[in-house]
Length: 404
Image (cartoon, rainbow, N blue to C red):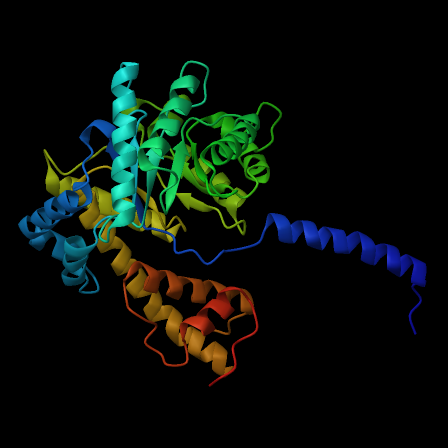
């Protein structure tokens, strides 16, 4: 017989029901979207409708030229599948860059480039073979660039005839929560102006300022930014060089694996955890031109390092990066699936095997297998009981579907 008075129990239930609802709202978990493995950045003045195919062809040529070296990095015989991927579908996600990669131009010149970019985005949306998702990186929201940034976004959408499927815009140099509130208002205004559905516009926040990680009062603004984004923020992207430079790191030491960069990405990862917002690693400026073998090894190492830390997407700035991005990703997930699938089979059979896994571990194992399937490392789990509905139920800690 309980000793807790009914009125006390009722107050506890009312209080904690509200807490449960708020946690569900803020941390809904994955929304089931497949995260791209990369975002390719192309300056607006170098863009053509054929850019993805051109990057793929250049990547295949580089792969063939350095096959022996790449073979030493390939631990799962993935190189043949990588070559097929580069021929058929090399670019998953692409941003037309109007910021650092484009620079300051006369307004008339950027106006023309913005309209042309919108036309290319619309063409990709109409045909097969283009990036599954694409958009622009506009200039920042600081006073000196704000007017130009908003005008460019408006002209891109005008050139595209609205919001193309899979469109997202990236906002660099975010430093304050109020900037994200303004972005939400901008999206609402553009949706009304273009007569498009509410919620159609989504954005990414590029975290490249220390003030987005730790504010003057000691709080982590990046978490508050997601709270005020009203579900419109799809990803947090890390800006390697602006961030490390702002932290005072000397130019020769600015890199994705610098401790300052690791700290920022760890804060981003925790802020985005269970929100459905992706975290995207930054870029390396070392490209396979002058010393291709060193550049390929370096990029492959950085991609593997990021994957092991749970950053499943990164920037690619050169066609050569596609080779090592796909190779490292396929190799990583093939190895991971070799470990995850037997453990999931044991979990479902309640046998335990060599490791007795808990539901949280089964969730992570299933999510890993799904990522491996989604990116193309393997077409399926290779186990008849691990169907996609079963994997998604495990990843969501939902009831398993009934066996047919």
